[in-house]
Length: 403
Ligand SMILES: *Cc1c(COP(=O)(O)O)cnc(C)c1O
Image 1 (cartoon, rainbow, N blue to C red):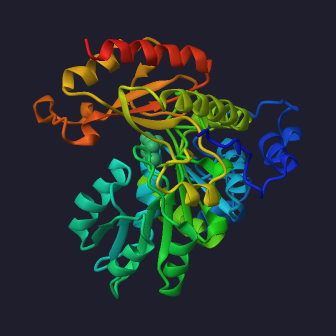
Image 2 (image 1 turned 180 degrees about the vertical axis):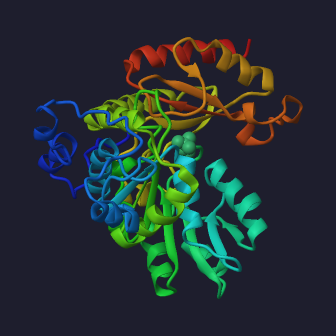
């Protein structure tokens, strides 16, 4: 039972297109001494030579360069590439994925509205719906998104937004994206998806009818664990509105230097995803039979409950998967994690380095219950190291687990 070798970028890209987007689109080298790497335009403001020119931009900042809280030339290159990768008309880049989520959601709700959100979305998305929007008269119903019927059942006359995350980043549940967006469109409801796990190379939500697509660029787009950023893409109409309202007003745009780091990350995105996807497949296949692992969660493993759906709507999966240890105590889970030598123990993922994230680190030690399978889950991220090097690390740590 091996994982099929199907890791090719989404069909929408010919390899030529992807190469063009990553290497050329948005770069106007003749304006900066034909430098290969774009300049970091580290300027807060931009000068005008006439009142008329200044007035034009003050009345519509979306049009050009006025002030770097809005537009900036370095960020502009990045926006063009990110929009093209998502197959969207425009993109905005934020200081974090959480800021992109906040701006996107805020732009689509008003007092008295109702939101349907997948059960257990990214923790800060949950926080936004549960603790912040609820203070402003926006109520959220969380549903098991593996069944499209659950979205239908949760609909209310005032539902204005459906929020998706497919797959999520711990147990990788998916939603049937095309089916949910068809339902949403029939009721004039906006859809937002968190596409951080797949990136546009492995999943194209706009092609499946999603209105707004967000990504934590901190993960695969950066790829080097050296910056925090977020992406939001959609129609020009929606993006322009969010630019002029949420982005400018929250002031949560990205800094030029961080945008430049993301441009650098993009150059190698495809090859990093390929490498990580291949190694992930090798590591998962090897761990599958391990006597101390009860279960592996990986959307492209043939025994994953939503494998058929994953094959239909995703073109690949790289890096993240979760193992559920056959541990009897918290000490055993901790001993496994503490014994890892090459996997670093840290939050986040998508960088060059392999990582381990024990779910039990999120709860007080005394609440650990081996009967709750989540407490025995360790999320692993396979970075760019050699697969054999990583497998031997996991095997030696598993050996130490039982003490
Ligand atoms: C990390 C992450 C986010 C948030 O992004 P930040 O850049 O950390 O703000 C959102 N969704 C998912 C799935 C993530 O993994």
